[in-house]
Image (tube, rainbow, N blue to C red; front, top):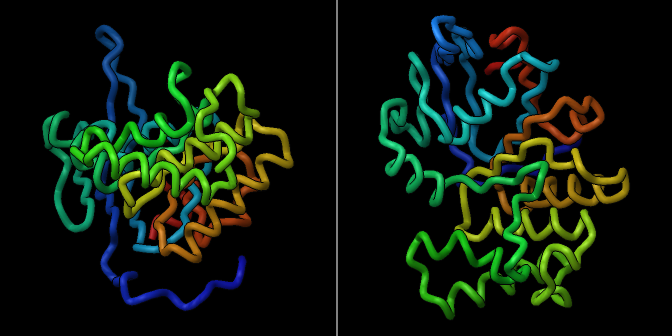
Length: 239
């Protein structure tokens, strides 16, 4: 466990994310397949949490729940104290855009857009004026040491550089939570370490709440706490 700096007053005691007895059951024809079976967990503001477990444990479904990408079959999900369990997709999309920044294993960059255009994209949906979008995108890419790659398209960037663009994009709307899904999965070890150092810096210096979903035990050292899943249930570290 790494040494932690004293948290700011912004890091209050109430959970920023809370799952209470969450179930997710998928219907495959006439067969019901449970992916989550009464999952309960809390994430505190400014915390770095790793969700881990073997293949089939429910990690991906848990990520969808934590990230407001889906709603549970039953159970309650709270974000900043607000129950979001039964919101419409349009309402969930607005919440995601304001409060959560996503980092994906596959980068998910738009290949026809430049780095600065990719980073500016999430701000369009929050009605940020174009000149502010460009200014903020440039600032974030410079923070990622990509100031000389503003007008490069993804195909012109290395894997590590693409993931740094993706991190900058995740920060575009200054979210409270960064949700990282296997953030080093498509990177070599050196680039992966650089990405994890960036996430740690955002967590420790910017008071960002980070939730990382991974199967890589080597990444657990970066987290404050590990939540382990098995067969759709939390078996360790839920609170």
